[in-house]
Image (cartoon, rainbow, N blue to C red; front, side, top):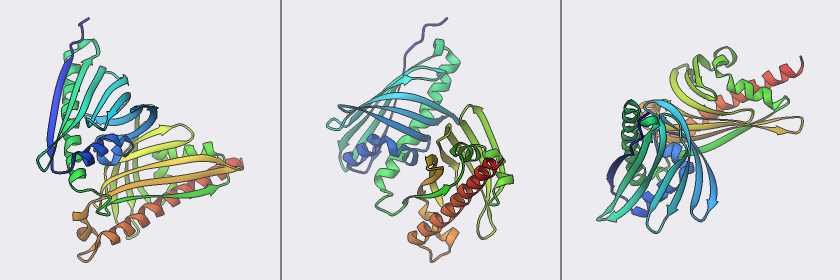
Length: 315
């Protein structure tokens, strides 16, 4: 067995935005799913004194992975140190640091990693190095874009939710949402669906959805399932109008039935607005169109899930 060798990488990018704004994006890990392309979902646990534990799911070389890290935040020095508390093969250990250095009209962002591969395997080291290089490049580029063009201030960030109360067992409602491979037969707005679950409770979902105007668009998502109460997802392939789309289904006991809630976070693609909605369309029209389309499909899905649960209750 080889003794694992520690490998080190460093990536950097110059950002034309205040260091404080850039650091805030790095620190706000709960927003990473819409800030960083590789990130699917993050759960955060505050440990006090500038420390936190994060459970993160992200793509690495195209494959969805999950791990747990500890982070130490120093807003004065504008650093965030991290260490994987629970790694997943082929990673044996991983640590590193974000550092934001003010300078000139903006700042320099440096992202460093130190890692060991399981058993020091050379192929594993190459896989990890490639994943770090790909993800670091994507994350730094996204950080630059988000800092230089704040989407919230520009009206490009849209967050909303819908809820439906149903009379039925919450477990049956969850099963309907979890069994997305059956949606082609169960949901009228789904024209085609393909579901893979190579890792338990991590799903890849490709779906053709019918729009209200009769058109069909294809999306591809990664879904992380928390049995019986929550499914979070991120679209890796979005409709043209959306630069980013993340969401969540939540199911909770409510009296004798269930409360089902659908959450959406969307970043609009402004260049696509006139192509999709017409030359005179603006961001407000795009916000309204997206809210209507996603909300309509979500409510239809939740209502069908409720009907499914009610039918099972009558057996």
